[in-house]
Length: 283
Image (cartoon, rainbow, N blue to C red):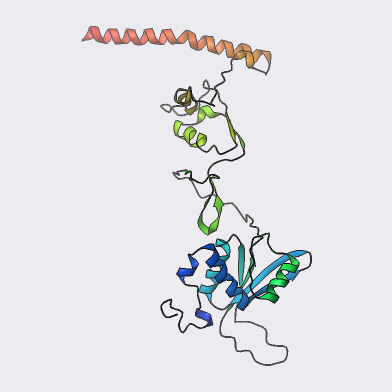
């Protein structure tokens, strides 16, 4: 007890030692069960599964219990009942509250039992537990910054982030379409293609004749054709004016622009050669 710093702790200063917080799931569950057996209990509501309530006067223990619950895949929310303004007892007897009280509402995943105490466990089982859910309260822009996507070695590409949020950067069991791909940079194209997950397919579409990138920037759609040409399970499909499904005139317009572009290439080359020759003569 002394080695863990628990000797002499009163209710407002109790906590869970780091040795137990960062341990196996079996140890973390056992610690949580002990805490809930002593200061927690099942709360039943008509038409709803059972939730668990835990009460403490220690802010540090409140945070430790939140950590334990979330690390086991559950959800927990807390509220404070301040000392100031608390209503007196109905029988007139004084209550000598000296601390704020922290109340936690807890839900654990199905198959994880929060109690070992028989009477509490039976009540929890009778009404059914589980179904922890999280909700998005709001989405706020954080600005633009350089980012690096990662891929982990797990077969499902999942990993845990801050606050035990489960996420991944790969796209599993999905059909993904990247449109207007001619306006991606080579780096963006690589980032997108490497997000391909298990059981997924990717279709990349674009028109290399309509690149809107700033001057001097390469199109990722142009570059990727040279890089991935010949790679198994990757196919490039080139469409021309015969594949246009818009108005008949669109086909004629596309053909006219292609002829115009082709006619200008030799002229540009000859002009460049002429300018180069004149510089030679001046030398």
